[in-house]
Length: 382
Ligand code: SF4
Ligand code: SF4
Image (cartoon, rainbow, N blue to C red; front, side):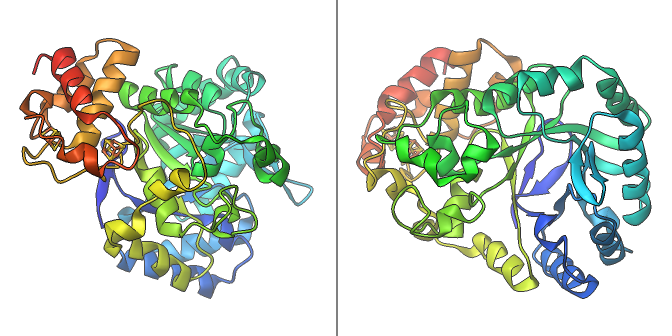
């Protein structure tokens, strides 16, 4: 298993994580077997937004004796009302469900406390201009949560959240289907087939890329939900690309977005968990998602690198994706010590490029790599 830094939290998370929502109605035995499979595969991050008491108790029992090995994302503001899931900004209700979470998970802290579901300006104000954010920050001060997160599906709102400077982690929906839709798309529209009918030609909205790169610049870690677009992408009939993608292609796409630390896949059984963990052994060909765009008449941001590194190997050992990514961020967000530090830590830099052009022949997206290496060398000075 490969592990990645979760922004600036100091936590290292497995790049394949578990989203717990699919076992909401499962028995304890199924949950335990799933956690066993995750643990055996080196997975160490679990998202648990579910307010239902049974699923919380099942996870608590399954994690007993090994809780320290896991980074748990628990949600603030996800509660039950009249027996049904409900999103709230009431501090008292959130406190009650937080206590319930800690008790049932048999722990006294949550690694990442995620303010649940902030998608619009109105949602943003209801959290960041009210006592709700004070409540969440106090939990962090008191060590009840180690890091403060927010979940969102909207890149404009999520960028605004990253820019507050007080959020450590954003749980965000990332997959190639959502990335095709305008940033104004609502969750309901993401789920509806109709939204995809107007996506011809398929163009990635550059404002999504801006959000991802802002997270890198600000040191905000991204964990990913909806990696398979709720299964839409795995089915030829519902995929907007006209054919079914594999889980590994979807996971690879999400993991290549800047700032992403872990994709949280929603396994229902131990077998499904192991299938997702097999990502670690998958070949580059099995993970290659370039045909998604190339075979669908898709268009990318003009000359924009996808940070996929399909263009390697490079005779000068340049990590083309990382060099390009840091140059893009510096160009877009202005000078930044942290981005300069990331760039400095790379083994080779833009100035090491000998202009052989081998990478450009391999890049599926016709990115002018040599030009990008020269841009990086100019921006960073080497
Ligand atoms: S230059 Fe092309 S192949 Fe290389 S990382 Fe960028 S998009 Fe991928
Ligand atoms: S053109 Fe530069 S970046 Fe591309 S393979 Fe050659 S040396 Fe590496």
